[in-house]
Image 1 (cartoon, helix red, strand yellow):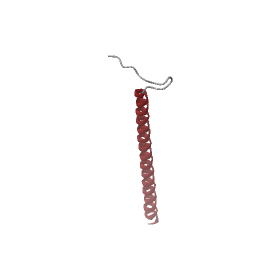
Image 2: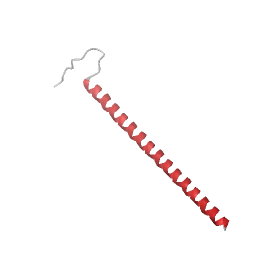
Image 3: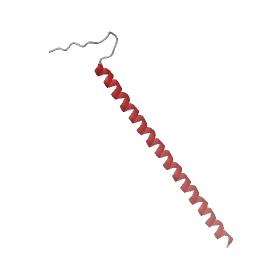
Image 4: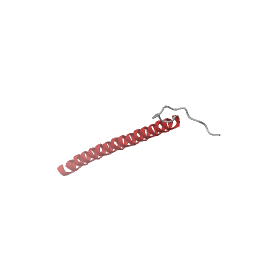
Length: 69
């Protein structure tokens, strides 16, 4: 049985609109996820860099104490 679609000329079928909306939702979700992972990675790198700097400063202080003896 063939169904006739009642559509205005030039308008998208309802199914195509839903598919496009679904694609847009998925693309936005992926984009947000990638941005979140990127942001978390950047924050982790900043924490690691800060920790290394603190360790290096601490090691420098230890070295200077030992040099005075």
